[in-house]
Image 1 (cartoon, rainbow, N blue to C red):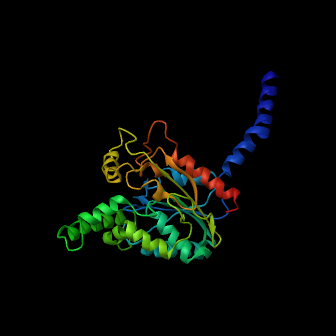
Image 2: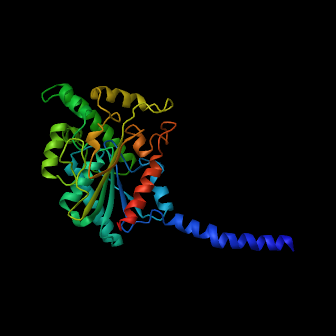
Image 3: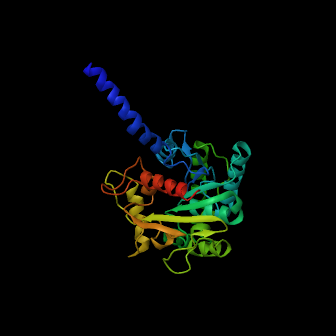
Length: 310
């Protein structure tokens, strides 16, 4: 009798408490428009369909009710070229599923890529969220451009190696778009970024290290970035981030992008305890012991988009 009563009590608790909670959690990231994740330089959607560039992010967002797609663009090329490839992907999604707009979340070079799409095809974009993107250029790109000037015999050799690496990444991820390392270098340099911003100024701050317009042509703009470099002793990629940080002097940076360069639209935060790869939960989620969880931050952004009717 006692066991039966207890069982019924537990059932009532589940129906009144746990079930609604589970239902609420399942809709936490259920945005009005699908989310499209856009990778950065030398990025990919998934290698062999097993290892995601956005490590653990797509599955987490989908668990909360979001429709999530991964952009498939060149690992290295001009921002505009990558942007046109992304437009192609969005139009394909529109044709297949009938979606009218998309929430773009771009990491690193994925930020300018998403901005280009929002600039030339605002009808396809509900929002752009920039994660650790070099909107005013990267000092690492500037240093490479100075080290490998036009006419240098090393320039075509290094560019050829990066193009080959990009092609391998493309092959392993099922992407056949053309690769052009020198185009990526030009786009990510300070001068190239300035020229790009003159053509596509939407969401860019009007003052140094300020915030940009929150909405332009019906598109919402958000951004965040990190300012830590050596974050986990077990993460071999931290060595590369440490080397990149040397070019920034005393400027706060994530190893590849300066703090102020990451600003776009509403700056949600620009000093997370992450380096450039931590921002998308690389490598295998390794990050600083007390650093915020990037998956949780992106999940919260999806909920913010949902609350904004996006």
